[in-house]
Image 1 (cartoon, rainbow, N blue to C red):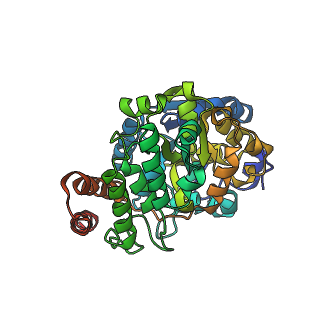
Image 2: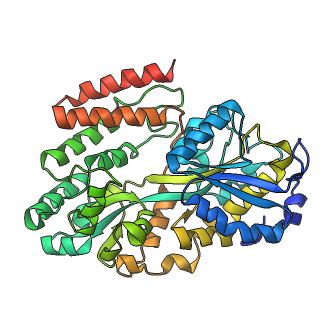
Image 3: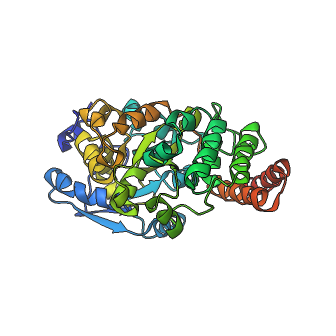
Length: 421
């Protein structure tokens, strides 16, 4: 095992990762990495570390906005044109690409990522594993789910955090009190609650929307409950009915119009750095209601199957450096709130430091517990489409009074047609 914080070329070569099975040392002097914000910043910050290992090989970072990046990668994989040596992918797109033939299987020689499996957060590793056992990407960071809440609003309303987290019914009851006494909404949009509940109670061998045989699961009790809880929140007028990352959403967070926000641990950094920095010290973090341990996002690195063969050895060395080097994992954590996928970092005293934005709360301990308890969810190439369909049907329920069973049945038929065509 490579020592924490150290990844030498000699160690990699000794493991047989730069030779054999068609993978050779790079003949070119440039390694191209395609990324999206903020992954591009993490890669750029790691370039000095890379130069110490390979002063002769330049890292070229090709950065595009999130959607443009993934669209470009989809096109590149389908046409085998303008392929980077390494591509960063968000977890939703890992699922989309996992069942195709566009990415190298990192479980096979000479990569043999399976030998390092225990070093990665288990659920993140499994998210990049398809039904045939191929591992199409290496996890770099994860997003443990958390509930952020305004301590000042709860104090004014006479509501405790325990009331918010005990159960979803208790969360709603607390929201009613908060709205009555302070005028603040409980949450920005009920779609956020639906997203969490859909990720709760998934059984082994199941994915979010499909089982291991691609059968659609959206009429199951898990979906019915998610819709019922979301409808109850809307009926009590507890959500502001604004979309995440919109201007209205940001203003609600800045002005104290939203009492809670549900998302990944990385959201704290977003609030602190640009969304609502003036609210520093007013927020606190807790586990999601009912201890609904869920993952919000995550970044991965993959090697396109048809990328330059001469660069594959160095591409894999780069991925190992970015995902298994303790020093670099912490650098990304500290600079970009990129929660490590490398579990051997979890014993570091850094997790016990207070966060000024959260009033000195040691919230990383909460997120570490969540990271250890999140259940792996099998990926499926149609997850993004299914998510759009389910979100649209929930809107029909909330805005038009459509029955929940009918909405889910309609969604199931539409998703099944797409999945099996």
